[in-house]
Image 1 (cartoon, one colour):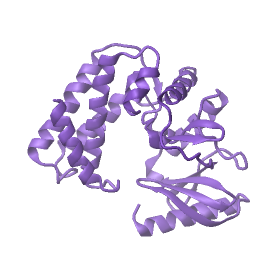
Image 2 (tube, helix red, strand yellow; image 1 turned 90 degrees about the vertical axis):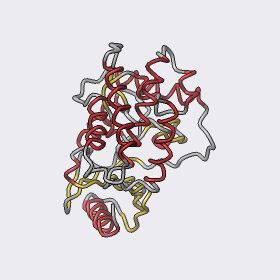
Image 3 (cartoon, rainbow, N blue to C red; image 1 turned 135 degrees about the vertical axis):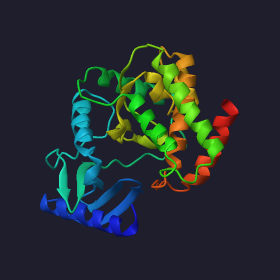
Length: 274
C-alpha cells in the first residue's frame, strides 16, 4: 500500500478496534504489501487490513477458526472480539492473536516438516470451498500473457516464463496423484517460532493440490523429513513455484520490496533449470 492508503488503513483498524473495546493508541506496521499487517498497542492485537475488493478476509477467518478447532498449528483469532470480518472506509479488518516470536536463525528442518505435516493432517478433515493450485498458476499465466500488465518483461523472458508455467501446469495436471487442502505458501516468512510452538500464518493463499506444492515453498531439506514425498512431483512444483513468484514480481502493480531485482535474479535461475 502507498503512504496515503496506509494512513487510511491504520485509521480504519484503530477505529474498529476502539469500537470493540480494544485500546489501540499506537499501530506498528509489521508488513506492507497488497495488505497491511499491524500490531496495535497497548491492546496487543494483530490486525490484518486489506482493500475491500480483495474479498479474501472471510475465507481466512472461516479457515482459521476451523483449523484451530481441529488442532492445526495456526495462529488464532483474537479471543477478545467476535471472530468475523469488520469493514470501514473501504477496508476489511480482521483481528488475530499477536505472538512474540522466539529469535531463531533457522527452524530445524525436522521441526518444520513435523509442523507442516500436522497442518496437512488437520486440513484433510475440513470441507471448505477453496481454489485449485492451478487457478493460481493461471493467474500468473495471465500476467505473463498480457504485456500491459507486465510491461517491463522482455520478450525472450516472457516466452521463457510463459512456457515454463504452461509446461509444468500440464505435467502436474497429468500426474493424477492424491490432492488435499494446502496452505499455499508455507514459506519461512509464514511460519512463526513462538512459545506455543511453530504456528503458520497468512491463510488466504490456501488451495487444493499435492502436498509437494506446499513443500516447494519450504527450505529444500524440509522434504527430507516429510513422509511419502514424490520427488519427481516436488522437483516440478519447485520450478513451477519459482516461475509463479517470478511472474508476480513483474506485475506492474507489484509492491514487493526490490521486486524487479528479484524477478531478474529468478529468471536466471529458471533459465538455468530449463
